[in-house]
Image (cartoon, rainbow, N blue to C red; front, side, top):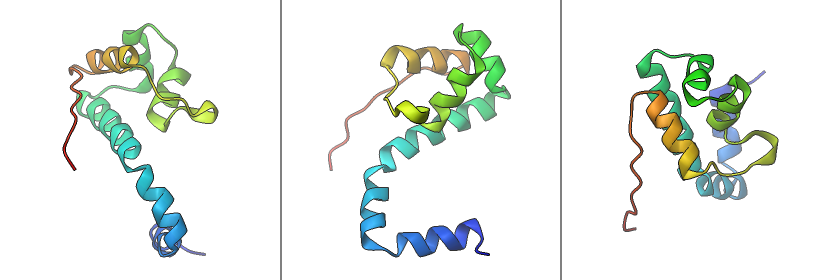
Length: 96
């Protein structure tokens, strides 16, 4: 049985898989930032949900990329999340 690292390396060696993976890099980066901010704040998903006025599964879906519906979070939702973990939301456009 392959480890997660080995499987990832194997899958990303396929050019088609790699291309699709690279298309999602920005989204992965966003979700990584959400998790880092929550962990740095020392909060659970339940804590964040209470501070946002929502339920824990909604926070879990947000951090996991939207769940089955695969929708992008609104700026308002991201602001609420940022505030709940003691941050502010900053959005930038960066030249390629």
